[in-house]
Length: 329
Image 1 (cartoon, rainbow, N blue to C red):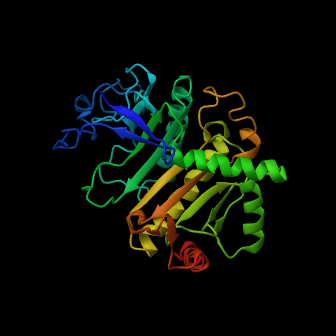
Image 2: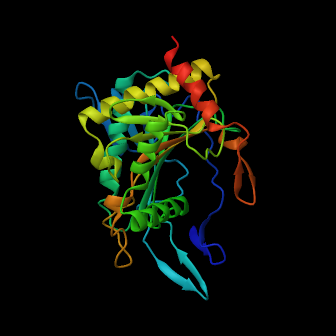
């Protein structure tokens, strides 16, 4: 049985599991006409009333073939002597972003990207109805080293604990709010917009920023200018359209002016507020946390010493290059 085990010396969880034997199919199992290879679809946006598990979809959600977390498993928490163990009940899903096998976020039109964003929202709302799911990560890779080119998809991972990175981020946001009674991200936005030097693109609803302490050259954050802790609650017809246009413009710029580099996109949003283990969990999260998207270009090139990131390209230089690229035809 797969197990989540906690390292008491670092406070970090580790998933212990045997390596799966799944090998990608040829032809691609995610292309239209191969729906029978993926297992039953979990959700889909379809045109003209087409049938489930058949062609005619625009965005489709399927179970991951070699899933780390499974909804059908029983959630068990137990002590193993001094150690803590939890069974990996949750969900591992793929959001297939386009019927076109060769699409990327740089080639999809904004309407297609908007459909993907709405599916992000739908999966978050659906999975958060389950009180045993505590946190959900939505991310996507482009040109991941060692992984052959594949059909475009985002990965949804729902788990019975809070991801370590999410917990650290929530802690920092809560500490800042307790001291200043203001949202850390709202303060950061005001300062960055006023200073301008690290703003790559400014729109009425969103700002594309190169963060002050970028971990890698090219790291960019897409931050909504309106406060909100949860992506799924903030997405509206207007914000969905504007965010899709900004993402489309950003990734087209990245492909055209920066050589279409590999990247990881991660949606940072509040955990499942229905799932509270301790009294006071998430007590001020609606005020102190601010959802956003982080894009790390060439994440495999991150250079660290003892956990300290070393970035040899000043963020101000990257932001300047992005601004020029955004404005060029």
